Amino acid sequence: MAHDTSDSGGGRRVARGRIADHIVEDLRERILSGELPDGSRLPAERELADEYGVSGATVREAVRVLSATGLLRVRHGSGTFVTAEPDTMIGMSVASVVRLEGAGVPDVLGILGALTRYAAQLAARHASDEEIAALREAAEELAMIDDVARTQENLRTYLRRLIAMSHNALLIPLCRLLVDVQIELAAEMSGGQLSEWRRVAGALHEDRIAIVEALESRSPEQAAQAADAYGHHAHQLAFTTLQAKEAEALDPRYARLLAGIFTTRLGPTGY
Image 1 (cartoon, rainbow, N blue to C red):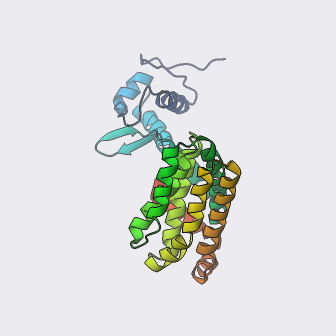
Image 2: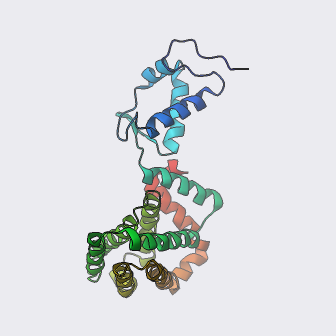
Image 3: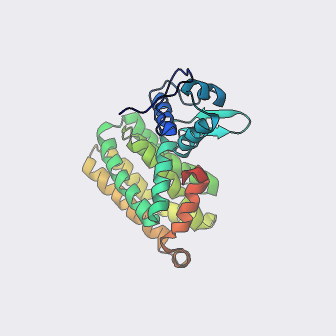
């Protein structure tokens, strides 16, 4: 038996049963289809209430749900805007799982390592010569470590270029998020000390060059091996120090640190 529908004359009448859920689904579809494009301002609350034939409170409930999933962002005093960015949507989902399951740094870096391996294999097959040359340039930039902030950005550039060369639309935003989290973890573990960045990032220079050379050879197998070696060496350098072990003793698996990084990046709505 069908639910009764609203009789207020709105253009998108919805069933009274679980009204807010129907509005959430309709707005989500309008956003994902591009009818409400990224960056656009959502119609005012009163306009949406009239359109759906519901109260303003029901519209606010639907907006809260979509904001929590990263599809909308409320700017107080300005309105509600569509934020249909893959990085944000994936970030919200990953952050929720990290919090719910109590995932730690080994879990996140393990996933990033596996995805980076796959990205390197794809890049060996699909990257252009120009992209590979740009990756080599980014690797060479990392050879000079004289500033913490610049080194972090150079590392981000290198890893993001590697991931982008996979040309995989799902892999790229997922890895971008995890790469950024990895860099922020490294920043925390280094204590902001240039000497630590030189010790870790400097020691990984040959590993980064090895990935480039594997891509230049167009060998997916060599690229995968080089990516694995890089990930293993990076973990060994960053998380086997006395400082890292003392930190883990206070925060097993660095779970609180990881949750804090996601909260900073995505805000409390990520949870």
